[in-house]
Figure 1 (cartoon, each protein chain N blue to C red):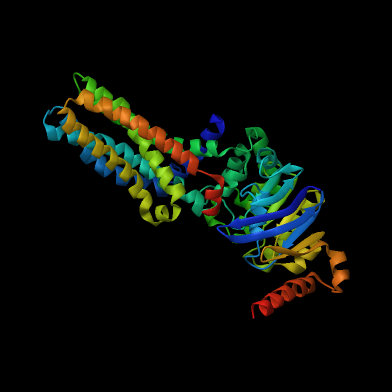
Figure 2: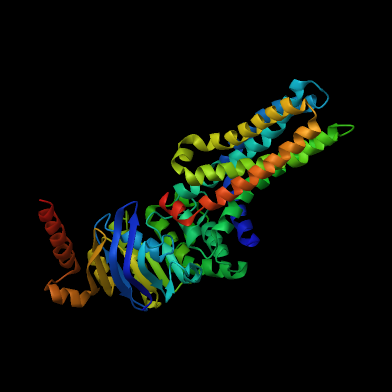
Length: 228
Length: 249
Protein backbone atom coordinates (compact mmCIF):
# COMPACT_ATOMS: atom_id res chain seq x y z
CA UNK A 1 0.00 0.00 0.00
CA UNK A 2 2.75 2.43 1.00
CA UNK A 3 4.76 1.60 -2.14
CA UNK A 4 1.93 2.60 -4.50
CA UNK A 5 1.04 5.64 -2.38
CA UNK A 6 4.70 6.72 -2.53
CA UNK A 7 4.69 6.27 -6.35
CA UNK A 8 1.62 8.49 -6.67
CA UNK A 9 3.11 11.02 -4.24
CA UNK A 10 6.37 11.08 -6.26
CA UNK A 11 4.44 11.63 -9.49
CA UNK A 12 2.51 14.51 -7.91
CA UNK A 13 5.70 16.18 -6.71
CA UNK A 14 7.31 15.67 -10.13
CA UNK A 15 4.36 17.37 -11.83
CA UNK A 16 4.44 20.20 -9.26
CA UNK A 17 8.18 20.78 -8.97
CA UNK A 18 9.57 19.02 -12.04
CA UNK A 19 9.29 21.92 -14.44
CA UNK A 20 10.85 25.38 -14.14
CA UNK A 21 7.70 26.83 -15.67
CA UNK A 22 5.76 25.75 -12.58
CA UNK A 23 8.51 25.93 -9.98
CA UNK A 24 9.71 29.50 -10.61
CA UNK A 25 6.33 31.26 -10.23
CA UNK A 26 5.71 29.10 -7.16
CA UNK A 27 9.01 30.08 -5.54
CA UNK A 28 8.35 33.72 -6.41
CA UNK A 29 4.83 33.71 -4.98
CA UNK A 30 6.05 32.00 -1.80
CA UNK A 31 9.42 33.75 -1.47
CA UNK A 32 8.10 37.30 -1.13
CA UNK A 33 5.59 36.57 1.68
CA UNK A 34 8.22 34.43 3.42
CA UNK A 35 10.77 37.24 3.35
CA UNK A 36 8.21 39.49 5.02
CA UNK A 37 6.59 36.96 7.34
CA UNK A 38 9.60 35.07 8.78
CA UNK A 39 11.41 38.07 10.40
CA UNK A 40 8.09 39.31 11.79
CA UNK A 41 7.32 35.80 13.12
CA UNK A 42 10.71 35.65 14.88
CA UNK A 43 10.03 39.07 16.45
CA UNK A 44 6.79 37.83 18.00
CA UNK A 45 8.65 35.21 20.06
CA UNK A 46 10.42 37.93 22.03
CA UNK A 47 7.14 39.73 22.76
CA UNK A 48 4.50 38.69 25.29
CA UNK A 49 1.57 40.97 24.44
CA UNK A 50 -1.84 39.60 23.57
CA UNK A 51 -1.52 40.73 19.93
CA UNK A 52 1.87 39.04 19.54
CA UNK A 53 0.36 35.69 20.49
CA UNK A 54 -2.21 36.10 17.71
CA UNK A 55 0.36 37.24 15.20
CA UNK A 56 2.75 34.38 16.07
CA UNK A 57 -0.05 31.85 15.67
CA UNK A 58 -1.21 33.33 12.38
CA UNK A 59 2.23 33.72 10.79
CA UNK A 60 3.43 30.28 11.87
CA UNK A 61 0.44 28.51 10.33
CA UNK A 62 -0.08 30.55 7.20
CA UNK A 63 3.23 29.73 5.48
CA UNK A 64 2.99 25.89 5.56
CA UNK A 65 -0.71 26.05 4.65
CA UNK A 66 0.19 28.28 1.68
CA UNK A 67 2.74 25.68 0.52
CA UNK A 68 0.23 22.86 1.02
CA UNK A 69 -2.32 24.83 -1.00
CA UNK A 70 0.12 25.49 -3.83
CA UNK A 71 0.97 21.79 -4.08
CA UNK A 72 -2.56 20.56 -3.57
CA UNK A 73 -4.37 23.17 -5.65
CA UNK A 74 -4.16 21.04 -8.79
CA UNK A 75 -3.35 17.65 -7.31
CA UNK A 76 -6.96 16.57 -7.19
CA UNK A 77 -8.66 18.85 -9.67
CA UNK A 78 -6.14 18.16 -12.47
CA UNK A 79 -6.76 14.45 -12.16
CA UNK A 80 -10.41 15.19 -13.00
CA UNK A 81 -9.59 17.87 -15.60
CA UNK A 82 -7.08 15.64 -17.45
CA UNK A 83 -9.38 12.59 -17.05
CA UNK A 84 -6.41 10.70 -15.60
CA UNK A 85 -8.41 9.73 -12.52
CA UNK A 86 -10.04 6.95 -14.58
CA UNK A 87 -6.63 5.47 -15.31
CA UNK A 88 -5.76 5.39 -11.63
CA UNK A 89 -9.11 3.82 -10.79
CA UNK A 90 -8.83 1.17 -13.50
CA UNK A 91 -5.38 0.07 -12.21
CA UNK A 92 -5.23 -2.74 -9.64
CA UNK A 93 -4.86 -0.31 -6.75
CA UNK A 94 -7.41 0.75 -4.17
CA UNK A 95 -9.03 4.16 -3.75
CA UNK A 96 -7.26 4.25 -0.37
CA UNK A 97 -3.84 4.05 -2.05
CA UNK A 98 -4.73 6.87 -4.44
CA UNK A 99 -6.12 8.92 -1.55
CA UNK A 100 -3.04 8.28 0.57
CA UNK A 101 -0.60 9.08 -2.25
CA UNK A 102 -2.25 12.36 -3.08
CA UNK A 103 -2.67 13.38 0.56
CA UNK A 104 0.97 12.51 1.18
CA UNK A 105 2.14 14.90 -1.56
CA UNK A 106 0.29 17.79 0.10
CA UNK A 107 1.06 16.87 3.71
CA UNK A 108 4.74 16.06 3.17
CA UNK A 109 5.52 19.40 1.51
CA UNK A 110 3.55 21.27 4.19
CA UNK A 111 5.38 19.40 6.95
CA UNK A 112 8.80 19.96 5.35
CA UNK A 113 8.09 23.71 5.24
CA UNK A 114 6.93 23.60 8.83
CA UNK A 115 10.03 21.69 9.94
CA UNK A 116 12.27 24.26 8.24
CA UNK A 117 10.33 27.08 9.87
CA UNK A 118 10.48 25.36 13.27
CA UNK A 119 14.23 24.87 12.79
CA UNK A 120 14.71 28.59 12.15
CA UNK A 121 12.61 29.45 15.22
CA UNK A 122 14.45 27.01 17.51
CA UNK A 123 17.84 28.08 16.15
CA UNK A 124 17.19 31.75 16.91
CA UNK A 125 15.78 31.24 20.42
CA UNK A 126 17.90 30.92 23.55
CA UNK A 127 15.23 29.10 25.52
CA UNK A 128 12.08 27.40 24.31
CA UNK A 129 8.81 27.40 26.29
CA UNK A 130 6.47 24.40 26.39
CA UNK A 131 3.79 26.44 24.62
CA UNK A 132 6.19 27.03 21.70
CA UNK A 133 6.92 23.28 21.51
CA UNK A 134 3.17 22.63 21.41
CA UNK A 135 2.71 25.18 18.64
CA UNK A 136 5.60 23.90 16.53
CA UNK A 137 5.12 20.17 16.91
CA UNK A 138 1.41 19.59 17.43
CA UNK A 139 -0.70 22.54 16.25
CA UNK A 140 1.43 23.11 13.14
CA UNK A 141 1.39 19.54 11.73
CA UNK A 142 -2.26 19.02 12.70
CA UNK A 143 -3.22 22.24 10.88
CA UNK A 144 -1.44 21.10 7.70
CA UNK A 145 -3.18 17.71 7.82
CA UNK A 146 -6.58 19.25 8.63
CA UNK A 147 -6.42 21.79 5.80
CA UNK A 148 -5.30 19.06 3.36
CA UNK A 149 -8.35 16.95 4.18
CA UNK A 150 -10.63 20.01 3.91
CA UNK A 151 -9.10 20.49 0.49
CA UNK A 152 -9.73 16.88 -0.58
CA UNK A 153 -13.33 17.02 0.63
CA UNK A 154 -13.90 20.24 -1.31
CA UNK A 155 -12.35 19.08 -4.57
CA UNK A 156 -13.80 15.59 -4.64
CA UNK A 157 -17.26 16.61 -3.49
CA UNK A 158 -17.57 19.92 -5.33
CA UNK A 159 -15.20 19.67 -8.31
CA UNK A 160 -16.93 22.43 -10.27
CA UNK A 161 -16.53 24.91 -7.39
CA UNK A 162 -12.91 23.86 -6.94
CA UNK A 163 -12.21 24.30 -10.63
CA UNK A 164 -13.81 27.74 -10.58
CA UNK A 165 -11.18 29.00 -8.14
CA UNK A 166 -12.76 27.68 -4.96
CA UNK A 167 -9.82 25.35 -4.41
CA UNK A 168 -7.77 28.25 -3.02
CA UNK A 169 -10.51 29.19 -0.59
CA UNK A 170 -10.97 25.66 0.78
CA UNK A 171 -7.72 25.39 2.82
CA UNK A 172 -8.10 29.04 3.78
CA UNK A 173 -11.53 28.10 5.13
CA UNK A 174 -9.80 25.42 7.21
CA UNK A 175 -7.37 28.02 8.56
CA UNK A 176 -10.25 30.35 9.42
CA UNK A 177 -11.86 27.56 11.47
CA UNK A 178 -8.58 27.06 13.36
CA UNK A 179 -8.17 30.81 13.99
CA UNK A 180 -11.75 31.12 15.23
CA UNK A 181 -11.25 28.31 17.76
CA UNK A 182 -7.93 29.86 18.80
CA UNK A 183 -9.63 33.23 19.44
CA UNK A 184 -12.34 31.56 21.49
CA UNK A 185 -9.83 29.59 23.58
CA UNK A 186 -7.63 32.66 24.12
CA UNK A 187 -10.61 34.50 25.55
CA UNK A 188 -11.63 31.56 27.71
CA UNK A 189 -8.21 30.62 29.13
CA UNK A 190 -6.93 34.23 29.43
CA UNK A 191 -3.70 33.67 27.53
CA UNK A 192 -2.62 30.55 29.38
CA UNK A 193 -0.94 29.36 26.21
CA UNK A 194 -0.21 25.81 27.41
CA UNK A 195 -3.91 25.26 28.04
CA UNK A 196 -4.91 27.03 24.83
CA UNK A 197 -2.57 24.93 22.66
CA UNK A 198 -3.38 21.65 24.46
CA UNK A 199 -7.13 22.09 24.03
CA UNK A 200 -6.64 23.29 20.45
CA UNK A 201 -4.50 20.23 19.69
CA UNK A 202 -7.26 17.96 21.00
CA UNK A 203 -9.91 19.81 18.99
CA UNK A 204 -7.72 19.63 15.87
CA UNK A 205 -7.10 15.90 16.36
CA UNK A 206 -10.86 15.41 16.42
CA UNK A 207 -11.27 17.59 13.30
CA UNK A 208 -8.51 15.68 11.50
CA UNK A 209 -10.28 12.40 12.29
CA UNK A 210 -13.69 13.68 11.09
CA UNK A 211 -12.32 15.29 7.90
CA UNK A 212 -10.20 12.18 7.16
CA UNK A 213 -13.30 10.02 7.50
CA UNK A 214 -15.37 12.30 5.24
CA UNK A 215 -12.57 12.80 2.69
CA UNK A 216 -12.07 9.03 2.39
CA UNK A 217 -15.78 8.43 2.12
CA UNK A 218 -16.20 10.98 -0.66
CA UNK A 219 -13.07 9.89 -2.47
CA UNK A 220 -15.33 7.38 -4.09
CA UNK A 221 -14.95 5.58 -7.44
CA UNK A 222 -18.37 6.54 -8.82
CA UNK A 223 -18.28 10.16 -7.61
CA UNK A 224 -14.84 10.63 -9.17
CA UNK A 225 -15.74 8.93 -12.48
CA UNK A 226 -18.96 10.89 -12.85
CA UNK A 227 -17.23 14.19 -12.14
CA UNK A 228 -14.95 13.77 -15.20
CA UNK B 1 -17.25 -16.09 -23.03
CA UNK B 2 -14.79 -13.47 -21.86
CA UNK B 3 -17.08 -10.48 -21.60
CA UNK B 4 -20.73 -10.87 -20.81
CA UNK B 5 -23.64 -8.52 -20.10
CA UNK B 6 -26.81 -10.05 -18.66
CA UNK B 7 -29.86 -7.78 -18.36
CA UNK B 8 -27.46 -4.96 -17.60
CA UNK B 9 -29.17 -1.75 -16.51
CA UNK B 10 -27.68 1.52 -15.34
CA UNK B 11 -29.66 4.52 -14.18
CA UNK B 12 -28.41 8.02 -13.36
CA UNK B 13 -30.81 10.01 -11.14
CA UNK B 14 -33.88 8.55 -12.80
CA UNK B 15 -32.42 8.60 -16.32
CA UNK B 16 -31.92 5.11 -17.72
CA UNK B 17 -28.66 5.01 -19.64
CA UNK B 18 -28.75 1.23 -20.22
CA UNK B 19 -31.90 -0.88 -20.34
CA UNK B 20 -31.55 -4.64 -19.83
CA UNK B 21 -28.76 -5.08 -22.32
CA UNK B 22 -27.40 -8.52 -23.20
CA UNK B 23 -24.35 -9.40 -25.28
CA UNK B 24 -21.17 -11.41 -25.07
CA UNK B 25 -17.67 -11.30 -26.49
CA UNK B 26 -15.68 -14.46 -27.14
CA UNK B 27 -11.98 -14.99 -26.44
CA UNK B 28 -9.74 -13.38 -29.09
CA UNK B 29 -12.65 -11.54 -30.69
CA UNK B 30 -12.77 -7.87 -31.68
CA UNK B 31 -16.20 -6.60 -30.82
CA UNK B 32 -17.49 -3.23 -32.04
CA UNK B 33 -20.03 -1.48 -29.91
CA UNK B 34 -21.78 0.93 -32.23
CA UNK B 35 -24.38 3.62 -31.76
CA UNK B 36 -25.02 7.36 -31.92
CA UNK B 37 -23.74 9.82 -29.31
CA UNK B 38 -25.43 9.37 -25.94
CA UNK B 39 -26.55 5.81 -26.78
CA UNK B 40 -24.88 4.33 -23.67
CA UNK B 41 -21.61 3.07 -25.17
CA UNK B 42 -19.26 4.80 -22.70
CA UNK B 43 -21.46 3.82 -19.75
CA UNK B 44 -21.18 0.17 -20.83
CA UNK B 45 -17.41 0.40 -21.25
CA UNK B 46 -17.10 2.13 -17.86
CA UNK B 47 -19.07 -0.67 -16.22
CA UNK B 48 -16.83 -3.35 -17.74
CA UNK B 49 -13.74 -1.35 -16.78
CA UNK B 50 -15.02 -1.46 -13.15
CA UNK B 51 -15.40 2.33 -13.07
CA UNK B 52 -19.18 2.24 -12.60
CA UNK B 53 -21.45 -0.36 -11.06
CA UNK B 54 -24.66 -1.58 -12.70
CA UNK B 55 -28.00 -0.57 -11.16
CA UNK B 56 -29.28 -4.09 -11.91
CA UNK B 57 -28.30 -7.06 -14.00
CA UNK B 58 -24.84 -8.52 -14.25
CA UNK B 59 -21.62 -7.80 -16.12
CA UNK B 60 -18.72 -10.24 -16.06
CA UNK B 61 -15.17 -10.10 -17.38
CA UNK B 62 -13.26 -13.39 -17.57
CA UNK B 63 -15.96 -14.89 -15.37
CA UNK B 64 -15.55 -12.27 -12.62
CA UNK B 65 -18.42 -10.05 -11.59
CA UNK B 66 -17.62 -6.34 -12.09
CA UNK B 67 -19.53 -5.35 -8.95
CA UNK B 68 -17.96 -7.74 -6.48
CA UNK B 69 -14.72 -8.88 -8.11
CA UNK B 70 -13.28 -5.68 -9.56
CA UNK B 71 -9.95 -6.38 -7.86
CA UNK B 72 -9.54 -9.57 -9.92
CA UNK B 73 -10.65 -7.91 -13.16
CA UNK B 74 -8.37 -4.84 -13.10
CA UNK B 75 -5.04 -6.63 -13.70
CA UNK B 76 -6.58 -8.43 -16.70
CA UNK B 77 -7.87 -5.40 -18.58
CA UNK B 78 -6.45 -2.45 -20.46
CA UNK B 79 -8.64 0.62 -20.77
CA UNK B 80 -8.35 3.39 -23.34
CA UNK B 81 -10.64 6.32 -22.56
CA UNK B 82 -11.95 8.59 -25.29
CA UNK B 83 -10.17 11.65 -23.96
CA UNK B 84 -6.60 10.34 -23.62
CA UNK B 85 -6.10 10.63 -19.86
CA UNK B 86 -2.38 11.31 -19.92
CA UNK B 87 -0.35 13.65 -17.71
CA UNK B 88 0.45 16.58 -20.02
CA UNK B 89 3.62 17.77 -18.29
CA UNK B 90 5.19 14.31 -18.15
CA UNK B 91 6.98 12.78 -21.15
CA UNK B 92 5.79 9.66 -22.97
CA UNK B 93 8.36 7.56 -21.08
CA UNK B 94 7.34 9.04 -17.73
CA UNK B 95 3.64 8.41 -18.41
CA UNK B 96 4.31 4.79 -19.35
CA UNK B 97 6.70 4.27 -16.45
CA UNK B 98 4.15 5.64 -13.97
CA UNK B 99 1.46 3.32 -15.36
CA UNK B 100 3.84 0.38 -15.10
CA UNK B 101 4.57 1.16 -11.47
CA UNK B 102 0.83 1.22 -10.70
CA UNK B 103 0.72 -2.36 -11.98
CA UNK B 104 3.69 -3.21 -9.73
CA UNK B 105 5.95 -4.06 -12.68
CA UNK B 106 9.62 -4.07 -11.62
CA UNK B 107 11.88 -1.23 -12.84
CA UNK B 108 13.82 -3.51 -15.25
CA UNK B 109 10.68 -5.06 -16.71
CA UNK B 110 9.11 -1.60 -17.07
CA UNK B 111 12.08 -0.39 -19.10
CA UNK B 112 11.92 -3.47 -21.32
CA UNK B 113 8.18 -3.11 -21.85
CA UNK B 114 8.47 0.61 -22.67
CA UNK B 115 11.09 -0.18 -25.33
CA UNK B 116 8.83 -2.89 -26.75
CA UNK B 117 5.91 -0.46 -26.91
CA UNK B 118 8.06 2.25 -28.51
CA UNK B 119 8.87 -0.28 -31.25
CA UNK B 120 5.27 -1.42 -31.64
CA UNK B 121 3.82 2.10 -31.86
CA UNK B 122 6.85 3.70 -33.52
CA UNK B 123 7.31 6.28 -30.77
CA UNK B 124 11.12 6.34 -30.40
CA UNK B 125 11.52 9.84 -31.85
CA UNK B 126 9.19 11.34 -29.27
CA UNK B 127 10.36 9.34 -26.28
CA UNK B 128 11.19 12.37 -24.13
CA UNK B 129 8.60 14.80 -25.47
CA UNK B 130 5.96 15.99 -22.97
CA UNK B 131 2.44 14.85 -23.80
CA UNK B 132 1.27 18.48 -24.11
CA UNK B 133 3.54 18.89 -27.16
CA UNK B 134 2.19 15.86 -29.06
CA UNK B 135 -0.39 15.71 -31.84
CA UNK B 136 -3.78 14.09 -31.16
CA UNK B 137 -2.80 11.03 -33.17
CA UNK B 138 0.43 10.47 -31.25
CA UNK B 139 -1.42 11.01 -27.96
CA UNK B 140 -3.82 8.26 -28.97
CA UNK B 141 -0.90 5.94 -29.73
CA UNK B 142 0.52 6.69 -26.27
CA UNK B 143 -2.94 6.11 -24.81
CA UNK B 144 -3.00 2.67 -26.42
CA UNK B 145 0.59 1.97 -25.38
CA UNK B 146 -0.24 2.90 -21.80
CA UNK B 147 -3.15 0.45 -21.77
CA UNK B 148 -0.78 -2.31 -22.94
CA UNK B 149 1.95 -1.69 -20.33
CA UNK B 150 0.87 -4.65 -18.19
CA UNK B 151 0.16 -6.89 -21.20
CA UNK B 152 -3.58 -7.29 -20.60
CA UNK B 153 -5.56 -10.03 -22.33
CA UNK B 154 -8.67 -7.85 -22.65
CA UNK B 155 -8.88 -4.30 -24.00
CA UNK B 156 -11.68 -1.78 -23.71
CA UNK B 157 -11.26 1.00 -26.24
CA UNK B 158 -13.65 3.92 -26.01
CA UNK B 159 -13.70 5.77 -29.35
CA UNK B 160 -10.02 5.11 -30.12
CA UNK B 161 -10.31 6.98 -33.43
CA UNK B 162 -12.32 9.95 -32.17
CA UNK B 163 -11.01 13.31 -33.38
CA UNK B 164 -8.25 11.78 -35.51
CA UNK B 165 -7.67 12.60 -39.16
CA UNK B 166 -8.44 9.71 -41.57
CA UNK B 167 -4.79 8.70 -41.95
CA UNK B 168 -4.14 8.60 -38.24
CA UNK B 169 -7.48 6.84 -37.63
CA UNK B 170 -6.42 4.21 -40.17
CA UNK B 171 -3.07 3.83 -38.43
CA UNK B 172 -4.73 3.37 -35.03
CA UNK B 173 -7.12 0.78 -36.47
CA UNK B 174 -4.15 -1.03 -38.02
CA UNK B 175 -2.60 -1.11 -34.55
CA UNK B 176 -5.82 -2.70 -33.28
CA UNK B 177 -5.56 -5.25 -36.06
CA UNK B 178 -2.01 -6.02 -34.91
CA UNK B 179 -3.32 -6.49 -31.36
CA UNK B 180 -6.00 -8.83 -32.67
CA UNK B 181 -3.25 -10.97 -34.20
CA UNK B 182 -1.73 -11.16 -30.71
CA UNK B 183 -4.99 -12.82 -29.63
CA UNK B 184 -6.22 -9.91 -27.50
CA UNK B 185 -9.94 -9.72 -26.83
CA UNK B 186 -11.10 -6.22 -27.70
CA UNK B 187 -14.32 -4.36 -27.07
CA UNK B 188 -14.28 -1.03 -28.86
CA UNK B 189 -16.71 1.76 -29.57
CA UNK B 190 -16.31 3.64 -32.82
CA UNK B 191 -18.04 5.70 -35.47
CA UNK B 192 -15.77 4.57 -38.31
CA UNK B 193 -18.02 1.86 -39.66
CA UNK B 194 -16.14 1.02 -42.84
CA UNK B 195 -12.85 0.52 -40.98
CA UNK B 196 -14.55 -1.25 -38.07
CA UNK B 197 -15.93 -3.78 -40.52
CA UNK B 198 -12.38 -4.74 -41.51
CA UNK B 199 -11.18 -5.03 -37.93
CA UNK B 200 -14.13 -6.47 -36.02
CA UNK B 201 -15.67 -9.93 -35.84
CA UNK B 202 -18.90 -9.11 -34.04
CA UNK B 203 -20.95 -6.03 -33.29
CA UNK B 204 -23.75 -4.74 -31.11
CA UNK B 205 -25.83 -1.76 -32.15
CA UNK B 206 -27.10 0.30 -29.26
CA UNK B 207 -29.48 3.25 -29.28
CA UNK B 208 -31.01 5.07 -26.31
CA UNK B 209 -29.66 2.45 -23.91
CA UNK B 210 -31.12 -0.55 -25.74
CA UNK B 211 -29.30 -3.11 -27.86
CA UNK B 212 -31.11 -3.31 -31.18
CA UNK B 213 -29.00 -5.96 -32.84
CA UNK B 214 -26.04 -8.13 -31.86
CA UNK B 215 -23.97 -10.89 -33.44
CA UNK B 216 -21.39 -11.75 -36.12
CA UNK B 217 -21.14 -9.05 -38.80
CA UNK B 218 -21.61 -11.55 -41.65
CA UNK B 219 -24.73 -13.04 -40.08
CA UNK B 220 -26.29 -9.63 -39.44
CA UNK B 221 -25.59 -8.51 -42.99
CA UNK B 222 -27.21 -11.66 -44.37
CA UNK B 223 -30.20 -11.33 -42.05
CA UNK B 224 -30.80 -7.69 -43.01
CA UNK B 225 -29.84 -8.27 -46.62
CA UNK B 226 -27.29 -5.44 -46.60
CA UNK B 227 -23.84 -5.27 -48.13
CA UNK B 228 -21.96 -3.19 -45.58
CA UNK B 229 -21.84 -2.40 -41.88
CA UNK B 230 -22.78 1.16 -42.74
CA UNK B 231 -26.03 -0.10 -44.31
CA UNK B 232 -26.68 -2.24 -41.23
CA UNK B 233 -26.14 0.80 -39.00
CA UNK B 234 -28.49 3.04 -40.95
CA UNK B 235 -31.11 0.32 -41.33
CA UNK B 236 -31.18 -0.54 -37.61
CA UNK B 237 -30.49 2.82 -35.94
CA UNK B 238 -32.39 4.80 -38.57
CA UNK B 239 -35.47 2.59 -38.27
CA UNK B 240 -35.31 2.76 -34.47
CA UNK B 241 -35.10 6.56 -34.54
CA UNK B 242 -37.96 6.78 -37.08
CA UNK B 243 -40.12 4.53 -34.93
CA UNK B 244 -39.36 6.61 -31.84
CA UNK B 245 -40.19 9.79 -33.76
CA UNK B 246 -43.47 8.31 -34.93
CA UNK B 247 -44.30 7.17 -31.37
CA UNK B 248 -43.54 10.63 -30.06
CA UNK B 249 -45.79 12.20 -32.69
